[in-house]
Image (cartoon, rainbow, N blue to C red; front, side):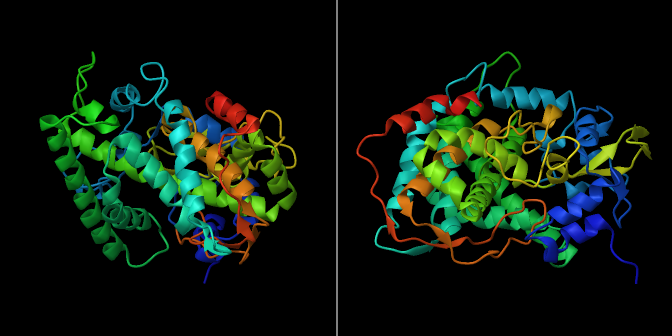
Length: 426
């Protein structure tokens, strides 16, 4: 039997705890082939070039093997904006951005900062009297879920319902888990339930306007018109899932990295304003999204000396590119003081992560608060158990021990106020 390709070894669950040696081997051949014939791109410059190349499509409908029942969420609904190319992508993204960030709503995310700090403080406070916990179950999962619910205006009490749907959809994109047909059925069922849920919220919002981004999108009378009900259903589903799944991994990978670098953990405890640079290094060093699959070449593309033919399927291995020694010196060293830290943690080009401003602030708030309040924090298992998904790579659990939970301060310290003022500047 032939040995699996390097990329197929990456997606094998046995590599989940540490895929980085395989990424280093991948970079020796900037464009390689996976066992399914797709083209795997692993160096920083080649990835950046393709992220900005209009000949690389994110629309699954350009695939030679595309079928209607392989739509991103459910048949009958349009793809979300991340599954579209211009001009359709640009229109939907502009309409969403009107209610998310600059220039139309520049203060939405930063106005949530104090509330986010309160959520984290409350979750950590519930650990009082304990000396061990699973950080993911107790903090890093419920925190971004609560935040995205507040942002969208989704009832927080519905979280148990959409957690089941999100888990089914996310597991369906894992090429190593279970029977393909069974995964597909679970995805379609979960996606249909989630889209139907948002359809009900959208209809209720038209009759009884509420608060949050979803209600504003329903009532938007901007110059480009409104998103259709179907477009709202697809994109609200995407924002809900992507708005917490990736941030869970960012914070969990961040805490795992800090616990493996106790000197940096102690420094963060003393200097919470370090969090901005720290999060950028985490996005480079242990990114929550490891690669971008399912890109299609719309024409022959010469990249790094290899021709990717028209119709070729392309995977961009972001995590390998961010550790490319041709781009960054000593890439395997975790260094929050790294200057000029350009990375691929949020992708790039027109599909640069829509939620990057929110994810950055969530991590910048959660990490220093966990470092400060959980005294003598240490890992209970290393490596911890990992989620099976190789794309959204992160621990399934993060068991830790600590001596005690320090009380929340009555008033925020000078360092915390400085941190909050500068959160949105990165």
